[in-house]
Image 1 (cartoon, rainbow over the protein chains, first blue to last red):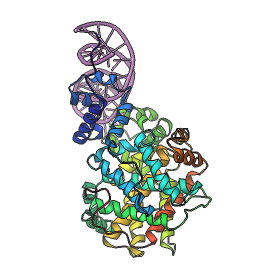
Image 2 (cartoon, rainbow over the protein chains, first blue to last red):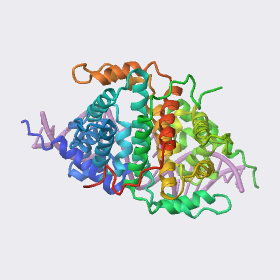
Image 3 (tube, protein in one colour):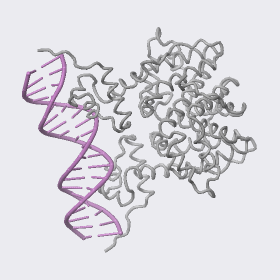
Image 4 (spheres, chains in turn brown, cyan, yellow, red):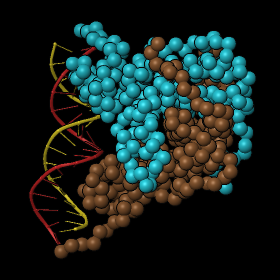
Length: 217
Length: 217
DNA sequence: ACCTGAACACCGTTCAAGT
DNA sequence: ACCTGAACACCGTTCAAGT
């Protein structure tokens, strides 16, 4: 006697995100997600093959409203700014989920569509071949790093306060900068760093040196 | 009858890193680290209070040879390039440990000393107040993001190959870029992206706009 | 077909016991 | 003091059973 499915995948993802928001990423388990839905743990396996698939479902759910279309501004750096800002906006309400998105970035279809659009902007701006690879990876490295910093250690968080209390003799600049940091908003920090990267991209072709600074001499 | 300690903290950290290199970050457990040393699991708790402290020990061990002194080049961007390259070099042999370092970045003394030196370079270059905060956080965001990308998805890794096999109709640029990416070395990628950020920093004062692109309108 | 609960092999950590 | 092993409360997942 077949019963109808009691769950939409959307509800499962939303429940998992609710757990993350309340208990952190470490608090998300198959058991806690099931409990959030009032189901047995094993019932989840009707909807996802394993925990990995649940994480992917969460990523798609987080980005469900992400506009991956080209912004269409005549200035290409402005388009990249908009595209990065949209991702940040999608995650703003769920900062603790950021590491989960980064881990699943290469399998999440929405991320792939977003990346295709970013590449369209870069291509129209004249980037090609290895330069386009480096421009994309550099931009995305900043985006992930910035979102991760916001997620793990907000500027007004405990880590910053700890640094502001460091011994002045050993860490004078770190102390001063950490104190000042508490007055910089997360939005200004993100926008300011992104402006640096975009100015660097606009300033010319990217490097094509043979050896990186971290490579063996 | 007191027995002498059978272990130096260094040996514990080295054993934990050996496990990470062999079995990945998920493979590091109190049990696996103890087994690597031929001790009982609980013996480790003579040397660290908990798993968190073991992770911190690993971070300090990974950076034990990191030179945190100012490079002393007359060109300040070159100094930042050197300082970032040193960190990358310290982690080159242990890529799987990168997420662990990022998670512990605010408690690791070596990271703090490195940051103090970076701030010295930025200060000498004329950065101050909020601009210095944003320059530091932007540079570090790139550094963490780039190391994380190298750690989680190397340019010649499975994720890139998957993207290169995407349907050409939906992802033409992503396909082409992923194919091209396999021919870009990790060192060139890191150096190229870093050059973008440094060029952006050198190009002028950082942004002081009131609202970020990911903030609510 | 959908859902459940017991069970298995893990995990970090507490605690009492051995030398 | 240093180290051990059993035990507890977790975890993801397998499997047999219920409706």
